Amino acid sequence: MKTRVAVVFGSRSVEHEVSVVTAAQVFSSINKNKYEVIPVYIDKEGKWWSGSKLADLKSFKNLQLKSELGLRQYRLSGIWGEKKLVSVDGWPKKEIIFDIAFLAIHGTFGEDGTIQGMLEMLNIPYTGSGVTASAVGMDKVIQKALFEKEGISVVKYVWFNKSEWENNKKEKIKEVEEKLGYPAFVKPANLGSSVGINVAKNRKELEWAVSVAMEFDRKILVEEGKLGIDEINVSVMGNEKIEVSICEQPIKGNKLLTYEDKYLKGGKIKGMASLSRLVPAPISIKLKEMIQEMALKGFRAVGAGGLARIDFLVDIKEGKVWLNEINTLPGSLSFYLWEKSGYPFSRLIDRLVELGIERWQLRQKIQFSFDSKLLQK
Image 1 (spheres, helix red, strand yellow):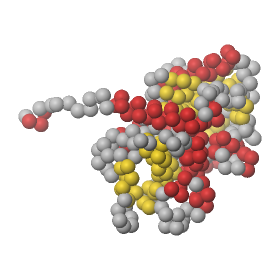
Image 2 (cartoon, helix red, strand yellow; image 1 turned 30 degrees about the horizontal axis):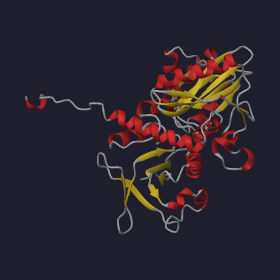
Image 3 (cartoon, helix red, strand yellow; image 1 turned 60 degrees about the horizontal axis):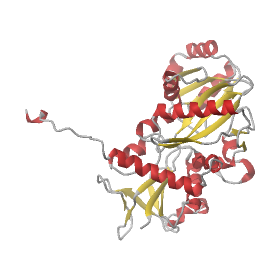
Image 4 (tube, one colour; image 1 turned 90 degrees about the vertical axis):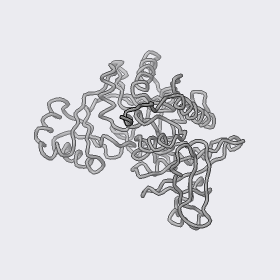
């Protein structure tokens, strides 16, 4: 009997379209002799839809024609232990049974621990990291603080909330200038895909960059702008037994790796696979091993599971490495790194399903209740 895999994608996120592309890549590579594939699309309003046409990327050009595409709206049954979607519109009512949720959502309401928490409350298996690791991986400030605590090198940084900036702008500017100087990278703390990120080379640009970042988040991260360094990325996979992929070096169109660099290179929609890159990265064995060791340490530090991509800033000449951030649900699932590491995409999907089921089985052995007589007193 085939394993029924509900591929969940979309959601209320600025990375919505990136998620759609990742899901399309999964649909084209998943072993259909092994799995019954169920597309589950969450639109930008948070409504859940399913229908076979959602597996075709071309359908998203006319997605407003949901009835013509044969789509129906669904919700989770809401009953503990039921892996079931129930239709909320049309007649007759329809139910879709699945075995595991394959998460292909990037950014808010999907990569940040929210959907993971809902699935765990319902005791439904899913792929990827758990609630805590997903939440930590989404917040660039919290993960940096955690990495520092674990002795992992990160670049100097300053962070503040929108209210702190509005009430004490001069003090925050002074803190940035004294601690970091210019250039500085200004980022929303809880976004990915380089959305809302800008380089500030002076005070005027800093104020502008902060105003842009605040359109996407109330929490802002400002990082020291290291000059003459490269970005090196690596992927890590596993639960308790962890593997690390080959390293890559993205080729940047500008000093900052942009959304266009990541997703729109070559004029074709390929998600993170569109990015121009050197694989393997042209670095020494010593530097490669240092990066891979730090990646494993960072993966463990946040308690990640399934798969993650970890990005580093590297001074190749000086041999210095800083962990930049962890992505617990990376674009295209970093399949391009694992293909070069001996995992064809179809096998990578198999492994993520296996890890998701393994993690769910381990949770079944945990005691979540305690027989107390407190309420009988």
